[in-house]
Amino acid sequence: MERILHGLRHSPACQTRLKQQSAVEMLITYSWAMLIIALFVSMIFVLSFSKPASSYIQSSCNIEPALPCAEAIATAAASTHPIEYIVLFSNNLGAPIYMPSNSFAATTTGLGVSGTATWTGNCTPTIAPQGSLILCKAAISGSTAPPLGSLLTDSFNINYGICSSSSISSCSAAVYRSTGTSEEDFLSADINIHSVTLYDSPSAGHISLNGVIYPNNTHVLELPGKYQVYAVPPAGYAFSSWSTSNITLSSASQYANMTVSTNGTITANFVSSP
Image 1: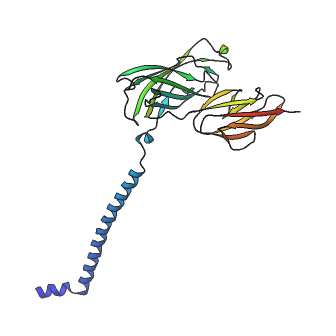
Image 2: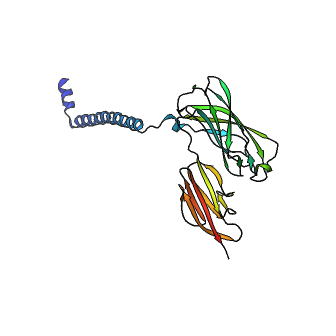
Image 3: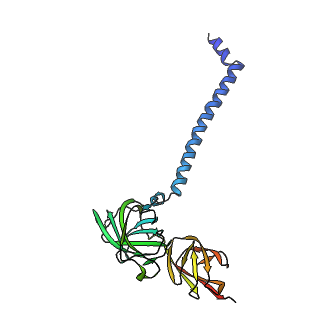
């Protein structure tokens, strides 16, 4: 029997099967080794390039359809300012609106104090043209705060009046109130919202910014990014040139793209047209 088994083990067919089996075992062993190495390298890559928790959290806020929210955020206390609750929204009501003093009230939980509290604040600009962005801030006293990167759920009220022009005297005595809710990031730095001042020379002209026409010496609030500007000359004038400070334009023509990355100014210059 042993001689038979010995002969079978040393037969060509058996030798071939043994070699094939060894090759398969070797492939399996090396495959597991390569898989473990790949997983290890992937973990190192992810840990090396991982972002803070706040980078994966999307803030959102809701008011009413005519006042669409662009951003909501809460910032951590620093030596120069308290905790702040910030809401940025657009005026799509079809008319300028007036933001009176203390027009903003935020109700938060776990900010400043351990429970729920309401904080009043102000909104800018005081007169917001149709289509413009409005920034509301409420300062929060106290040191109670969640970990950075947390997602908070809060609510707020906005009081405003309806105007027929850019003059406060044209605004109605009636005060309207809109309520909103938000899910916002809690971060360690203020949201980057820049002030851009629009000038016209002569001042009777206008600048159209993303389709919204602004009169001379108007301060608008914008997030970093690119915006479309168009110079609207007054009667008897034609567009001449742009003058800018801390603002980049895609071209020198009457219609251009404006890049906002910090506070700045832009002036539309006009010349008399025969």
